[in-house]
Amino acid sequence: GENVEQHPSTLSVQEGDSAVIKCTYSDSASNYFPWYKQELGKRPQLIIDIRSNVGEKKDQRIAVTLNKTAKHFSLHITETQPEDSAVYFCAALTQGGSEKLVFGKGTKLTVNP
Amino acid sequence: GAVVSQHPSRVICKSGTSVKIECRSLDFQATTMFWYRQFPKQSLMLMATSNEGSKATYEQGVEKDKFLINHASLTLSTLTVTSAHPEDSSFYICSASDIQGRANEKLFFGSGTQLSVL
View 1: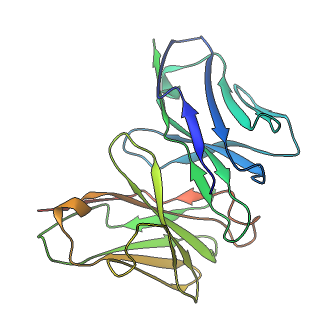
View 2: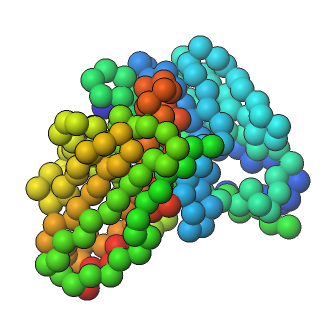
View 3: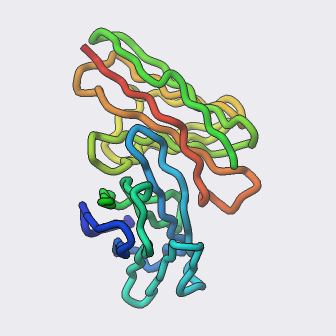
C-alpha cells in the first residue's frame, strides 16, 4: 500500500523567513496530494492541494510543488507569520480499490516573532 | 466551507463501558466518512472507512468488533468503542467529503473526541 514519508518532523523559523516541508510517496498511481494544517487543539484544515497533472500550485504565501518522477511533493510557505505555527500534514490519495488519504507523520512548524 | 460536527468532544469513562461518538455532515451529504485515531504529537491513523448503507472497511490491525461503525444516513456516521480499556484512550477524529466532490479528496474534519478510559 501507499507509504508517505514527511520531513522534517519539527521546523523552527524566524518570522518573515520561508519554510519548506517535504514529503515522498511510494505508490506511483497516487494522483492527488493535499496539505492540512492543524493548530493546537483544533481540527485539521485543508490549506492547499495539487493533482498529478500539475507541477506547481500557488495560493498567496503558500505553494506546493510536485515531482511525479521522483514521487515527492513539497509545501512552501513564504513570509512566515506567527499564526502559521501549527502541525502540517501531507497526504496522498491511494488508487485501486477503496480510495483513501494516507497521511504523513506531520511537521510541527514554529514561527518565532 | 462544509462543516462536520463531532460529538462528544471529550469523554471520560470506566473500563469496560462502551462509548459512542457521532460524526455529522451539517450542510452536505457524504457517502463516505473516515474515522481516525491520533496519538499525541502523531499523525492521523486511519481506522476505518464508513460507507453509507453498507459495512465499514477496516484497516489492518483494527478490530471491527471493538470499533463498531454505523453509517445509517448520508449525514451521520457513528463509532462505538465497545468494552473500552485504558489502551483505547486516544483522540478520535472523523472526516467526510462532499458527495458531489471528486472521490474522497477534499476532506472536512470533525473537531475530534478525546477519550479517556479509567
